[in-house]
Length: 141
Length: 339
Image (cartoon, rainbow over all chains, first blue to last red; front, side, top):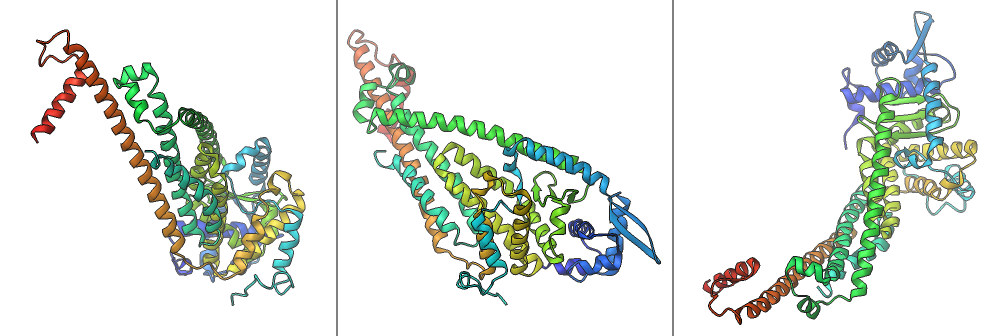
């Protein structure tokens, strides 16, 4: 439909694209085991971003209080601020457990799996050339 | 009326069987739109037909007939609908209306809850991370909606898969998929026959978001891996709750669809569906106009009866009609004569 790479790679991404970049950077920091420098964040973000863009996003997220940082070499290493997120976690948990009916409005990324589903998934993901899935799988490359 | 009033019901029955099967073979975006159109049109057709059938029964109640100034015998003579059919239709309609009302209240409450939660999430960014080891991820509709992901989910995905997950949830929010969900849920509440259609719709939305994520990250395979890994990670920790296991078959199907070549664009099933929906509308309109004509005839019969009744004792009362309705009608008839 559109070419996201183009507006991301440019120096001045649009407002929506900027929001998306913030999400991607935040997600990258959360998935890491420890603090990351801007360079390390850049390495973890697919899609050839400019180093300065990452720096800008990191400092914006820091200003919002979503990250904490400490000096590392000539720059900073960033880490997500955990206290708010754990607070949210408790809220979310109680809300989700409170009424399963509320699931109705949540667009979940994945639904639950049955045992057969699990086996099938393992087959689909690992054994692309497995005997049972050979007919369905196309490499696409 | 004799046949046309049943056309919307028949179309609904046919589509509720065929549409979910066909929708799975279509590209997900047109499939979701088609299922939304089907839900909307067949719901209107279904409710309209039941209302017409029920009304022909109600119209024969003497009190109602007196209020509407139509003749019950004339109606009965013309009426092609059995009274039992009318009663059953009325019962279905009432049950459907109650179901619709309850579902609408519930859905509105859920959406308001989601909206409030969106506002309460810390930060104003699109993504809210929840510090929790249980892998979970979902989109919370609101203004603007938020993507909620647990840190456990983020840790079990690779760099590209993480982007795929965010792109998937973003597609849900940007495509306003909760509006589609609401439509299907309400339609299924009014007419339980539409439940399979609502399920197929839910699946089409997931596929739609998958395909959009694939376009975004530039690889359908990465999305397939993200979906698969996330599902496996979730099921290991949460030991798959039985309530969700019923819909569980969806994940392998999504992964398989992503590993297969993209679904081709097909126009034939869409055209067929459009034709059936047109038929549904035409049937309803035809039945409604027939029903209207039937009432008109019954009113005219009542009118003629009352004129002959009043004329015998008062022969000089020419131009002094006993009933406003009749006067109006006579004038209309005279005008018709002149024309």
